[in-house]
Image 1 (tube, helix red, strand yellow):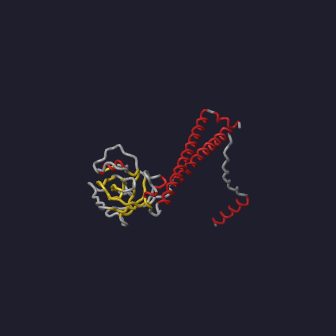
Image 2 (tube, helix red, strand yellow):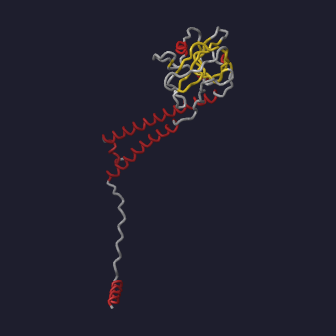
Length: 275
């Protein structure tokens, strides 16, 4: 091991620490990408398991709050729309600028009724205020998918608009006060058995696995490469300090010397050419 004594020098200790930090960082980054992959896989499994479920009455699944394991479940309920419609701006849909259209559905139940925020669909967002199709008057049978409420936004939105789908904020923007509210909202899929008129429905959520798994293995390969790189540099330094010569190149082949017979043959040929 004496040939590697140089590894204890300040320069090589510094290199070792640097390469070790790089390797450890790559391991942690790979683990972080792996956890992101697991989270996405669990979310995709939830979507695929709930999205195509048959609609059931909402009261069979939800009391006051939409549970995390029931998002994207299909439900059905009856009620009447009330208040003004509310717009959520700056929410792209499939890469297109869009305005989401919200309305409040007043549902009667044994507890005296409550309000449910309904995301009825979206319209392309251009210059000026978007034109919102009116919601149907009177009793309506609504089919939709459960979604968890979003957190409140402290910014003040223009009249009739919100930045996030938080039930209390939506109710205030719609001009509706009081009443119990579902802590969550619905993505409408049908009104009275038909697609929502005048609005574009939302596409199925993306359930592709993403690139987190490949990124995880890339980071781990980078970490292994840092260790291998340090070993290669150390072995090369050890050889140079030990004075191990490089393998000499093969000598050039010397031309064959002419024999006496060759010289006599050349002299005879020259005399014949002079005649």
